[in-house]
Length: 117
Image (cartoon, rainbow, N blue to C red; front, side, top):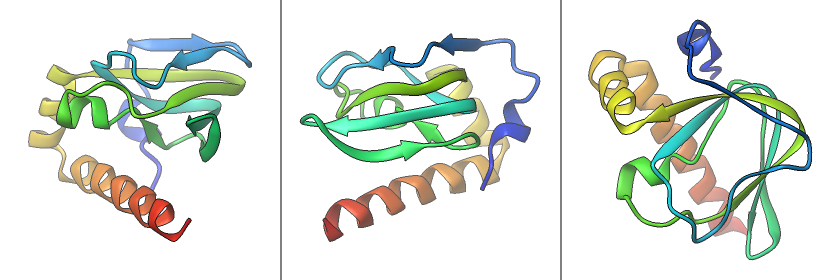
């Protein structure tokens, strides 16, 4: 499901050039991202584990468990992302059941892919 519609008018947009690192594995994390445009590659231990496209999310674990980043995220194309901090995340979880369900679906899909690998 595409989350761009929920965040289309959000003012907290970050632009990331192709080849730039959005965050590093083991680094601190206090925001997640919704990809509006572009593409982000997710790596764990240097291995690509996911390719995040427009409408998808990444970095959500940082808001769920407050642990260091579990992966590195690198823009493979110029990208525009909405930053979602804990305050906005909690608001969205409370006010928009679709958002909560989508975050859970993303987590479940990633877990299943890792288990199958």
